[in-house]
Image 1: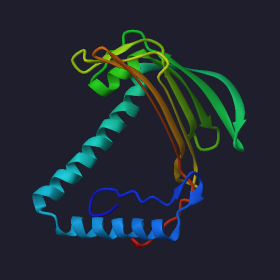
Image 2 (image 1 turned 135 degrees about the vertical axis):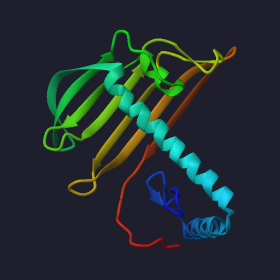
Image 3 (image 1 turned 120 degrees about the vertical axis):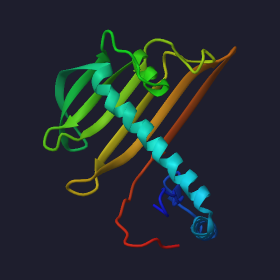
Amino acid sequence: MIDGSPYSRLIAVGGGPLSPAEQAQEGEKLRAEIAKRANESPQARAKRVAQYQKDRERMFALLNEMAEAFDFKQVGEQQIDGHEVYELQATPHPGYEAKSRETKLLTGMTGKLWIDKKTYQWVRVEAEAIKPVWMGWFIAKVLPGTRFCLEQSPVTKTLWLPEHFSVEVKAKILWWQKSYTHSETYRDYHLISAISP
C-alpha cells in the first residue's frame, strides 16, 4: 500500500529472478510512483483511492452474492497440498436475480470449492460458465467454456493469501468472438515494516 492504494512490484518472470538491470528498473519505477503519489493533488489522490475502493467493493459484492446465487452441497472430502478439505459443489440457485452487472455473471456459472477442515478457509475455487450471459447493454456475451481457478494458502496461522489465479474467457463482443487466457502465480510472501526500493 502506498498512500491509500496498492502498488505491485514485479520481482520475477516465469519463476526466475529479474536481472540486476531489470531489478534496478523496477526499483526506479517504485521510487517514481512513490514520488508521484506524494506530489499528487488532493483531487487526484481522492480519485485514485476512490477507484481502488470501488474495485474492492465490486469484488466483495461478487463474493458476498455467491451465498445467494448458488446452492452448495458437500460432495466429498480429500487432501490438497497437505490440507484436509471438504469438497463442495456449487450450482445456480433457482430464481436468483443478480443485483449488478458483475453479479449477473453468476447466473450462468457452476463451480466447486475446497474448504480447509481446520480453519474453514477456502483452499481452491473453480468456476465455469455453463450458459451464455449477456453483459452491458447486450453488447458482450460471456460464453460457455469461460472458467477461472483461484488457489490460496496460509502465509501465517491466520492469514491466507492467493497462490495461483488462472482465467480463460470466451466471449462474443458485437459480432466478434474473443478468447483470453491469463495465469498468475504468487509466492514468497513476507511482512515488511516499510517500503524499500
